[in-house]
Image (cartoon, rainbow, N blue to C red; front, side, top):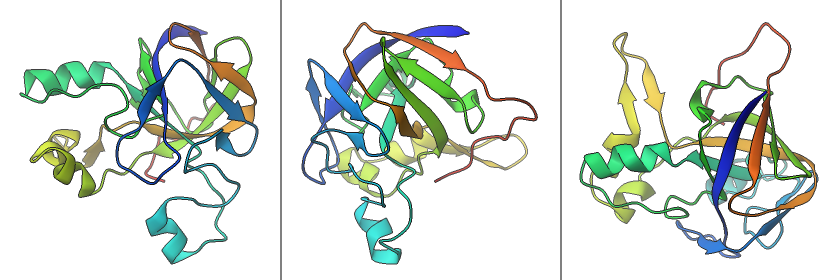
Amino acid sequence: MTIGTVVAVSRDDQHRFSKANQDSIRLLSGLGVEGDAHLGVTVQHLSRIAQDPTEPNLRQVHLIHDELFTELRAAGYEIAPGDLGENVTTHGVDLLALPVGTRLRLGPDAVVEITGLRNPCRQIDRFRGGLLKQVVSRDEAGRIVRKSGVMAVVLEPGEIHPGDAIHVDLPATPHRPLERV
């Protein structure tokens, strides 16, 4: 069981790109972050609603590793927790390497299950010009690499705060690699 740390928690009740940092957020089972625009059983992202509003919401909670911010600073981008629209900023957990179905215990009570990778869109370049090329690249084999975090659904409710521990529980093998959701 790997242990990491919650660096920041964020939410926004409007569909804006960035989310405001909070002292705590409450996760609600099967819904997402209380008071966040993406809370719901069915899709809440505007582009997804336009495609099919009845689809299940596999993007209830967005998590990003703060190690990405260090990488972006080295490339000349000052990015802070919440800037990229994430609800939970983590440290010490390689989120992008985790398989589908991984469960993260955030703080003493909340549990989320990773559903896939966030697929960054052109809005990221409107936020900071050129940033999309920093968070989407290609590996040596030419495959697309998405670095802008993972999406999850809430299995167990709870309040989480900066400084809370993160425990990682991997699913049974064989593991399925993350794909965009």
